[in-house]
Image 1 (cartoon, one colour):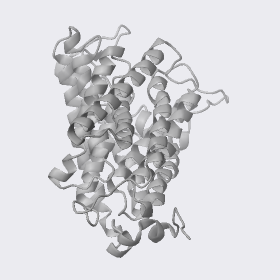
Image 2 (image 1 turned 180 degrees about the vertical axis):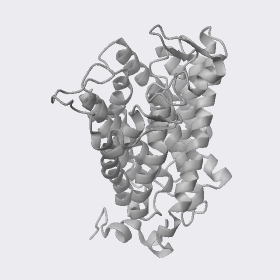
Image 3 (image 1 turned 120 degrees about the horizontal axis):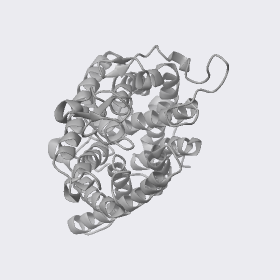
Length: 419
């Protein structure tokens, strides 16, 4: 589990390369710093109140847990006798803290791609701290901490299709939501936040008139490779044991990702006449995103079906920003939101035990749609409130600073010096 946590932590620097390569030459450092800033802010907050809000025992309305119950990880690491406290999965609880904080970090960092090249760094850091508190921790509690979007007897799924005996004297939802490793908590969450921010903050100078081409495609490919490698910690690690479920998650992650590359490249070839390296890298991420909620619930063949459709959908969806006029700079909406929604909902179709195409009925599909829709609405509203509340700080750098380069304006540095 510590290796899995380390792999997920590596994903954020990997994302920095992925996003940095997609950015303009004059804004690559700022883009990478947004990811590293997320690591800084989120870890500190997670230790103080994030773990408590996500996985505390004092539930508040099914939305979040008491942030002060385990504040600063008190009563979370050792007991009164100095013995390490056992967690829910049989190993020391502090190991689970290590694993879960890495998910919070990458979720916040993902959002940054939607607002690349135009945002003040200080405002971004303030947003990161507030958003992870008001959006990520509550959604993590709702899905994984026994809240409204979990399989608990008080969750939405139980209210829709009733409860059943859990065999231990308690009740659980008869049809439990499935989010194996973060389709709602991470990808729908970050994707809708990116869309809201892109709309509120506004477009880059020249959006729709000039081509914002990636300045370093090898960086993009390197970032995609690091993300794929780290994602095995993300998905296989979410089995919380070195067992068959972890192995299935590993195989499904690989199968879906390979199929998504094919889906994206075929779509590009038919539409544009070329299969590009940017398309291959983006297809990798689309497949990884889509399989995240479903990694333990599908067969490998089902994972490939899921992946190829994710590749096609995301390849088509990245063009929506030009049709609807929102400047999602690095396609957070087209990849993470669209593939995250598809992966979450597709469990109701392709799940090997409860999916409609595998002999199940409509109920799992309904539950998956409900949790996806709730996550969209909840995070969309919270993000909008935060974005407007931070307007007095100033979101945008000046037009002159944006035109000359945000690296120089915000960090007094440039990535490349030419004689």
